[in-house]
Length: 392
Image 1: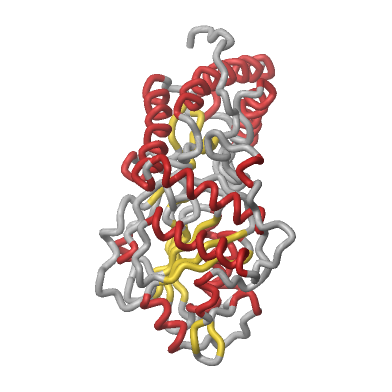
Image 2: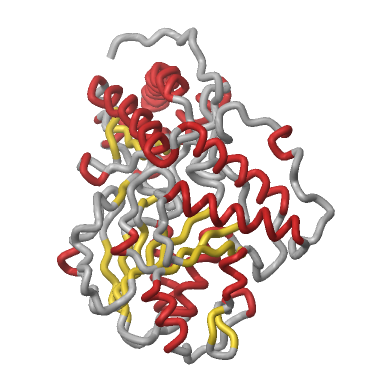
């Protein structure tokens, strides 16, 4: 590899974190000036803003009219666990996992809920499972986009329309950047801090009519905490899906989410959000094709995420080293980029293989991804030279 000179051009925005993610282009605190601060979320103003957040979510994502959308506590984690605690146990469940968060849902089902009929189907980082092995007459819990592994489900073709079970889909790093086939999904969850760059702590729960039917016909054997309860007296708590949240939301965060949704509508909706994420991924794909020392954790392009892009160092001097050395090398590259102020928070997730994770969601400008690529080469060569010095 020829000596790489220190690049002159820098990303205008060095924020490539996978969550909380970069704010939308042009964002400033002025965007929050109309927040309903100091007001009750149950007052007319607060409820109207929460209801608008639900309505705008439906509009931008194209959620069917007969699907319920609710704002729930504890980010995507709260939304997924609310669904699992409320819906699972009526029949057997296939727990499908290929990265850290999916593995967490397996733990909840097996060790916390202690479900007697729970099958676990797993794939390694950078891969997804063979969906032919999944039984959709059972309930199925899975992530659509592996935030920590850089993979995604390419489509919903493997999910039968006449399935007997429910599909519970953690879509937190997929919503607003990828197509979600709602007719194949009975529960969809995500959080505000991913593709639209909103603030944390609030989750979104989308329920199909089939999921609602399960809620009304099935009562779990275990007690449900208040923040998980979606029914009362055998009836759906409809207020949750009209902006009457279970616990007190941050109206500042609500305002921020409304601003992000407004931006999404202004630039062209879901089609443009997907285009922006795809364009960002394409920049990295071209860079990887031109540089044999780096590769994608998801080698199969058909399942490669366009949001959480995970990279590994394939140079023999690094790839052939011990896991400890590989981890130290990757952390060294990430630290150099942060010190230069060109890329913040792009180290691989703590449970994932050594490498980098560059967020390419819709709030990231393609020009910034392009400006970052030469810096990757610069930091890699500098770290490799240091590795060689240590070895000598």
